[in-house]
Image (cartoon, rainbow over all chains, first blue to last red; front, side):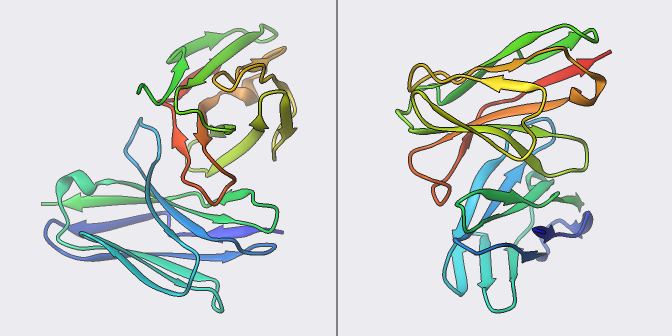
Length: 109
Length: 113
């Protein structure tokens, strides 16, 4: 079966750095997305990785290792507004998006 | 551009009732999707469409129906509502296939009692 694993919840301090991991086992791989979802709101796009390596976009970076079936989202200089759920989603061989359950990130002052 | 719009925002149904969740996009996207999101769970694909007149089942299609008569609109029909259909429903769209960013509507929170 297809499976995406993320930690259920993480806590970090304002101004710090946090890394949210995602491991996947899917039938084929055509890319990996990270989305941010604030409570009661719709998911919004953060990043897309299809090749191995690190993609940096301001305070957020996303890393992919296809051989290990592993990705992480790195958030720097955390702000209170970064409190949200972070969803990892993999595009499988049928070009269907398989979604993880999401990681709820709590930022403390 | 309004992006992806959904109506209603909230709805309470009684068991056995039917309703249609509306979704529209003004970005001229070919692909449209319906998801449901249960608490603590990932998004589950209900149905999707690759263009007007073409729809296909996703992971959890039972109890739902869709139609796509225009590029802009993709309504989701619930027949004979059941408590298991209590969820938040999101509509999304993208220009190309799933390697393209999906843009989500604000969601419909549905409770079936």
